[in-house]
Length: 280
Image (cartoon, rainbow, N blue to C red; front, side):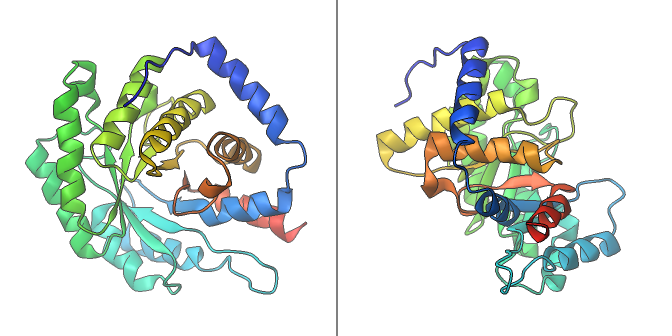
């Protein structure tokens, strides 16, 4: 199904520059920033997270919407499994989802039955989305089928919840590995593939994002099925988010400019984008 991916790192960087230059011409900035706000998974994933912090984040998520000014709310709130119910109970807008990291986030170094049990717990607590982590250790050992089977098992544990597969591209060491991990995440049943946990120094990058977008495009061309994309980790400035937006728009097309297929994981981005929209 997937072809050999032959782009070098330098070729990818050259493509990104060309795509961004083309995409910024005649870009509707007001629409772009409103879209970006609606794509955000408002996130807190700290060891010191409390019920109160989760409750406040849930309330924050519903404060952006304005019908008069055509301002959307964020897509979801993303927390640890133990805080899913708190968020679920305090979100006032039913259109805002609850996402939960699960499956031994962020390292993925637990037996599959433990990962599955945590995913099931998060879903029982009310999670609409599950953000799992790919087993990078097994992947780097070349245990590709085992990695794909783990994704499949977690997808089954999700039930009706959507599954985002975090590749942790900063640990994958090469363009070829990012490509292969993207394929495994998709073939295992992921509804989305996601760049990063935000817990290591190298988080989301435009280079990794383009490799992932190319994989999604190739899969859609071959099967007709659309897979979502989620960059996350270190995206705190609106201008940076805009670059990711342009890549998705130019590589995958307008169809992907929906929070059904495009999310951005962030904790500080929403307020900054909201301020830009207000000051248009």
